[in-house]
Length: 301
Ligand code: SF4
Image (cartoon, rainbow, N blue to C red; front, side):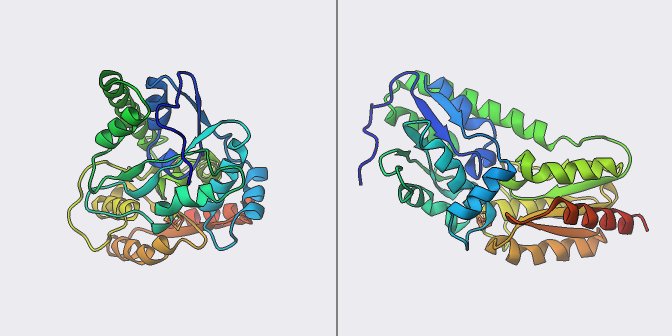
């Protein structure tokens, strides 16, 4: 299969970034990294209702919503840029593996119309290779010298840390508070988490987002990276610090459907109320608002 030739990445060349999955798992990282190498990162336009509907039409019907959104973002980028960055994501955390769907991303992208020669691939496997080393090797493959690549990597890692810190800061420090629990691509995408955050704020409830700390976790039976990070955050959670936990999950997410029971068990022991909202391309804001109102009311009893 033909791939973009090594060294064929001139200064200023545009690199498309589908705005989902690894874009949010590593917030702020890719833009800073590609910019540091003299390339022009071009994130896909933010998600909208039209894009969600398009995703539902374009993509395999059995996919979860983030995978459908990936197809829609790629379809938008294909006419705008000559190269789209699509890594093979095998692990984002030492000792853990990623959802198997993410390991096939470059192959599924290349199968889309017009994409065969446009995919810039790299392998993210933090169980074996730390992220900075993976970035360094990608930068060298793109024909940049080692000093420039190392500077780009260190600035990109700092940008990501700043983004993680900003995103996990609670919306207010006093009053009733809920913790939002979700994979980064549901949590940090304002189109998906925004309606939940806004509704809670309208109900005078402040919102904290589950932190995705990039540090090794103690052993546990959950081997999926993001699921394990969420589970450990719940295990550390102090019962008095939140009035409840709201999980935003995706229809057909196999990982969440299994790990959700582990989350429920931990929260039951701590007597913290737990609500799961399932998103798909047919989700309606009205149904979501009613469920949130009922949940907040019940937490007040
Ligand atoms: S973890 Fe779930 S939501 Fe994420 S890609 Fe896999 S199936 Fe989809």
